[in-house]
Length: 365
Ligand code: M6R
Image 1 (cartoon, rainbow, N blue to C red):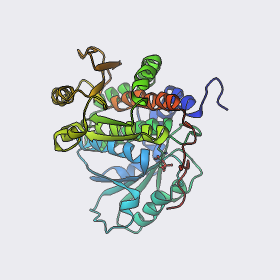
Image 2 (image 1 turned 180 degrees about the vertical axis):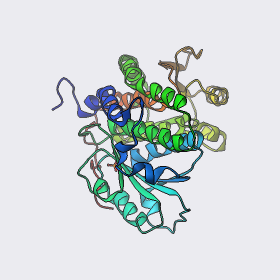
Image 3 (image 1 turned 120 degrees about the horizontal axis):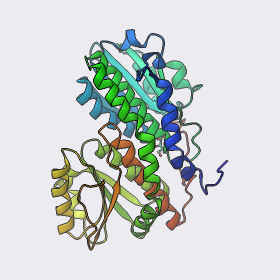
């Protein structure tokens, strides 16, 4: 049931602190990633992996995109992320020591399942499913399984399944990094960072009223642009998807560096631009992108870390979220975007839990 909440989506957003913890803890042993959480023979299958192919649809695909940044930077393995509907119909080149990963909440998405069956005929070293439903086809048919513990997700718009996928992908990256020589000391520090995720998420909950106000401004428009760099680019894509799914507004996400390559032409005083600007080495670049939006009179909503020095301006609102480290900032920045879409849908009076034309699980092509 929805309990004290008005919608399942709202309930599921506010469960994320709990389900993140529930996903993380059983995957640890003595403060380190417990490889047995992925299967009895996980160590043997994963220890010399050099390449990773990730395949998924929709929100799960965005989780894969976020992970590709971590996999390459932390583990030094090459990583390719692809939509299942594209992957399944092309000739793929599989190098030795490649791991095939599917991401899926339901484990029954037709394209993802077909992609796995196709992958099993290719020379992958192993297949791994990151999934939320233990009895699903995807889980049954994969060699290794790393379950998310999000519990049943009822809202068609995926929320808690996504952030728990991000958690498991981070744990997988840490494990692969260990096999590539990451020190135990560094692994403990990374896990410590992941342990802070539930608390950081709870701190974003307290911004709910402020986010509802921002959503009112967005809900009056018909289009919104989301910008991010690095891992925040797929998070921007996820924010745009949430908004279009439940408000029927048109929304797009761009890597901020692409602004001048086209989308800047759309920006005027009628266009809300949601910019994800965490404190990281890309911040200076992000700031110059925001100056371009400002110069065209765009309605900026900047989501930034506490203490990053952003201030509200005439046509600019700043939402500050807790300062978080690299592995968890994608989780922390997802929360305000989910809430933004949720409140915008309330203003527009759309069906939050069951958007028109969409099904929770896409079991046919
Ligand atoms: O069950 P899956 O994770 O495989 O589903 C994939 C997509 O259908 C799903 O994420 C969809 O995009 C959501 N409705 C997004 O909120």
